[in-house]
Image (cartoon, rainbow, N blue to C red; front, side):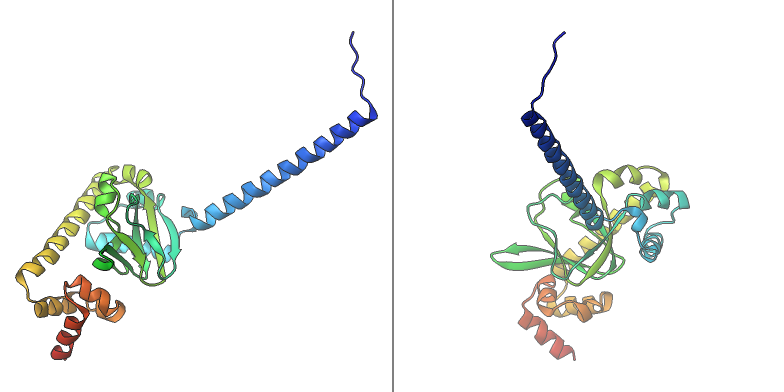
Length: 242
């Protein structure tokens, strides 16, 4: 039989090694805890969803698109998360693939492209709006746009691989999706036609009637870009209208 013999120096080495291993394991646990804590706080899970935000989400869906049975809304709620964005924070960067949609509980997003150093504002999303770059989201293409929080903003949001199975789960969810995209399509056509059929003054008056909150919360420079005119022209039209 072979016997192993350890000197005092060997035992000291083993003890030091064990201490190093214990120290390393403790550090790993600490790092794991911090990473987990940050993830949970950066992307809060569904059990932290604000009830008022969920109620507003359901109300908006049912009033604008179609009624939802309780079970269907529960499935949708299970794939939603809650987040706050600070004013000026970038939500989506140009060139990145959009993988989420956001429901605005409070605040405002703007979506815009940058051409020759100039912002071209194409849309604003206020409370009860569902925001996204839908072309990038649908076709998994790099976005041509930025989405930025125009104000401090609270949202419910969902990740495409999470919500996609839910939207095809039942007839009511399929109907909701169809009604939503039909509404988006008609709104885009209406906005596009305004540039073909209306004068700048008529576009201003139409927006004043259909979206009065824009003039209370969105800077004139962004509004002018959205209306396809210079800030100077918009100020002149407003002065003449008053």
